[in-house]
Image (cartoon, rainbow, N blue to C red; front, side, top):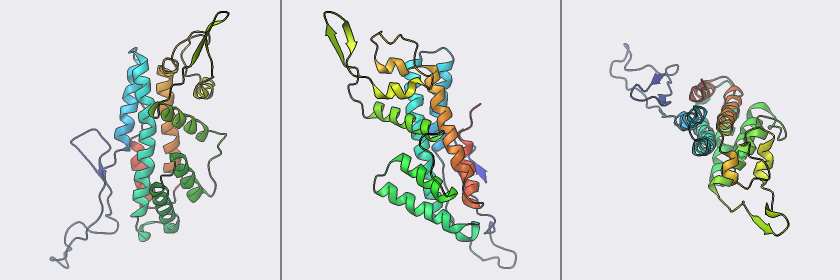
Length: 249
């Protein structure tokens, strides 16, 4: 295993030294070294963007912008993680896995989901089913928080006008339609402490250091499960390498 010394990112190559010798053997000095795949893992780099934003929000800096960054990049890092895992599984070697059929099945199904533009939730559910025999329970964590975080990211990326108010002579200004994502986040204790009757944007309500930290913790919890469930072998070793990029001090 080799770390990239030129940066602080999760830059590593996957070592296949169990299968190959590095360089010609003594018995055959002219033998060629077989080619092998090497990877630069970037999911940890993306997670670090989220983590730095969360740390900045927790250090007393303006929280709204940093919370939005942490929310978006936590999801981006989870998507990068599962896509990197699919690529690793697709190129796995049967002789280096204890259960090559499952690893290959995940790689093939993951690629089909990607080609058909399937959801991020589906990729994680398929991975959980292939490697453990059952999908995540949608009403339990870590999947429930995972789905809520993705819904929040989607509301930010595919932005729609959600803050719709009505002005009446009797009641003044009031929100006409509840904002669903706020209802899902309220129980997590991550929203700002603006009273319900105060008319502020939903971006202000999610722009907290608690939201930023929660987003990072959700991402860490989800990828931790993914790194633990594959069968023993080189694929699982590489999944654990990916997981190193999601450390939270």
